[in-house]
Image (cartoon, rainbow over all chains, first blue to last red; front, top):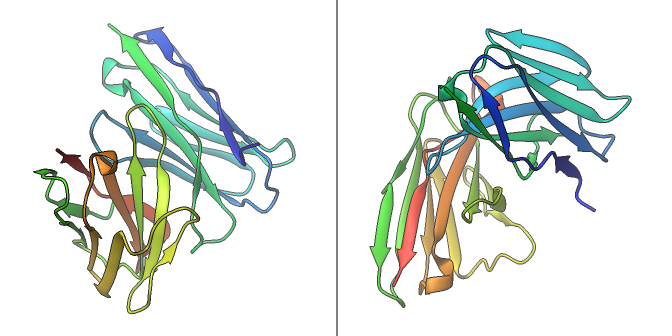
Amino acid sequence: QKEVEQDPGPLSVPEGAIVSLNCTYSNSAFQYFMWYRQYSRKGPELLMYTYSSGNKEDGRFTAQVDKSSKYISLFIRDSQPSDSATYLCAMKGTNAGKSTFGDGTTLTVKP
Amino acid sequence: GAVVSQHPSWVICKSGTSVKIECRSLDFQATTMFWYRQFPKQSLMLMATSNEGSKATYEQGVEKDKFLINHASLTLSTLTVTSAHPEDSSFYICSASGGAAYNEQFFGPGTRLTVL
């Protein structure tokens, strides 16, 4: 069983929809949680970085961490066609540690 | 955010040749660099972690003699694929952390390697 499981998708939504992307994990030592966006044939881009449980908001993006349930989410409000990409969750136990990535969810936002 | 560059962005080579990929942190000192490979529609697979001035730590199943990693300075790491074969064709991505970005990992744009 993988340490990090990500909803596989693909996900297709109309423009303006609210998108929910989710990951679960099994390692209770994870404390740092990240979401990356990766466009086709490009390197991943860090979107959100959170520590421990709670919510973090940045523009149209909200990251949510529930350590008790070992569950993290990324919400995208008012989704745009430019949000079409693969989204990767990642997590690690320490600041300097290596990250464990989910397999990614491919999102398509249709105009 | 911090900027990481990779060179070349794509390379085509003949089977049996060696290919070097450079990864640079442009605006911060990267004490740690990571090398990943990614096959189409698959997630990132960590190959190795390198700290400046020391030997890289390779993940299980990754041949250290085939994938040579050098992290000689705080802004440069190189991955050399030796005696490349068609099965080495993949997307290679580096990431870096350190300095003010010590707790975050910033990725380069990737290098697409095609071995004929």
